[in-house]
Length: 123
Image (cartoon, rainbow, N blue to C red; front, side, top):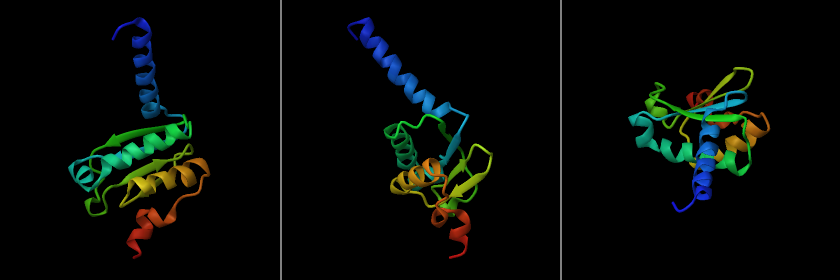
């Protein structure tokens, strides 16, 4: 670090990352990050959500993590709560599925039924 300007730039980037993880007036994305979730690939899923939201400049969606959600056989698991408080549980998530969920569910309000826990249980 050589100047105040560099320090301000670092601060700005850190605040942007914090804001995408803590906003609570819109959608809330919760990624199960217990040992089972991480082993199944939850980390790239969470990263994909954060990156896609930033790419689309979506600021009313919080991305957070939690421990075990309770259905280890379906990991990685992501729960999305909409602004009305309705929760959708997505299972067997991948980074690619996260991109689609941002586009369809968060941007357009259409649940990706084929990724939900209810759809998976009917197979």
